Amino acid sequence: MPLFPMARRVTGLLLTILLVPALALSQDDPVANFISEAASIWTDGGDEPLSTYLGEHPVLVGAVVWKLLDVAIEVGDAGNKKDETENVEFAELVARLHKEKTGSTAPLDLVKAYQGWGDAERARRGEAKKLEAQATEARNADDLPKSEQLLLQAKTIYEEIGDKHSGAVIFGSLGVVYWYAGDLDGVIGHYKNALQARREVEDRILEGRTLNGLGSAHLEKGDNKTAIDFYQQAVALRRETQDLGGLGTSLTYLGNTYSQMGRVLKARTHLEEAVPILEASGRADLMVDNLTAVANLYSHMGQPASANQSYRKAIEIAAATEQPGKQAVSCIHLGTNLRLVGRYNEALEQFDAAKKLLDDNPDASVTAVLYRARGLTYLAIGEMDQARDDLLECLKLTKEFDNPSPQIEAQLNIGYL
Image (cartoon, rainbow, N blue to C red; front, side, top):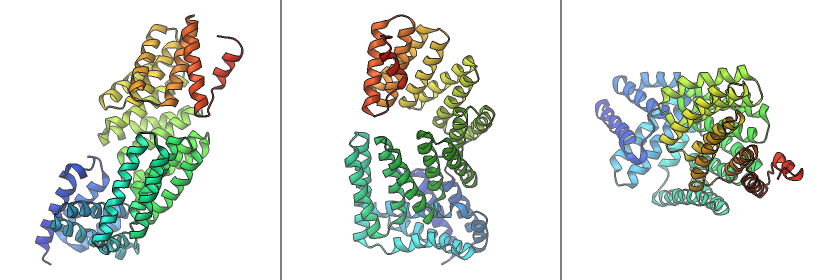
């Protein structure tokens, strides 16, 4: 087929990926950048320079091929068979050159599986995608058993039609359900399955997310050493894939873990490195975690004024980027710091702001922390009735998710109230 017509189709393909609202990728998406660069190189020089480029940058090929196929299915089902064909042809070209250069067959296997689907398999895949969407709705409605059931149904369909990539995604979604349920062993089990499945399809972007998730799960279990190991793996991989938002997040979580361990210098190094990376990614929403971690570090270093400044910035960005949960957490942190320096009225203002956010966006574990922080503030100023009410609410909530606070138990037992 003549080069020029094919090149024009590749250009159309890129516009399909980047401009269709339902399929739009974020501005710092390394997959979109890779596709754009690869298409430009191929348009200018053909197979040989593209093969060289792919050989020099093999890390994103798996994710690129699947993005091209996923978009192909979307536009094809919408009736645009021409764009579907063009996407598949370019995906196959990239996968074939990748195999010739590296010997890896995984991306080409994805293409061949897609090409083997008839109308029935495509319809079943569409059914599975709907089940995934319903699972997300059920999870958000706190119906976790239903969410898991729907995901398992979708997983079975993907296995039957040979859609390994979508199946790899499902394992991660199951892990999220178990995270919501507070079952960390279940989270780790599903994330480990996700890690293996995502490596098999060579989607290194998803692999980076999974490594980060495993770090967070182990951190939640109190296994800081294992958490650091997974975060370090995520950092190394995300540097390689140029996933800026992901890299900034992993550096932040790694720094925050060191901070919790009291390793101030290591924490500060990672947190400071994350700032320009997050700014370059254009993802202001990701700055909230970094600012909160920096503020926590300042608190550990005995610098409450600097900590409060960072908490206030985190609150501002969380509000601007519509992250009420994180905004509430930052308000609680700021209020706690204000209480510790005797600024009780300002502290209560922050706790009340957090309570309003949590009333509209319920989170039992965060609300328990809020009640404890506000209760201790009331206790400090001698408002015993309010203190009793808040601390009892904290105790009630923590017992509900089987994580009672020893400090609250002690206060109740020794008669503070």
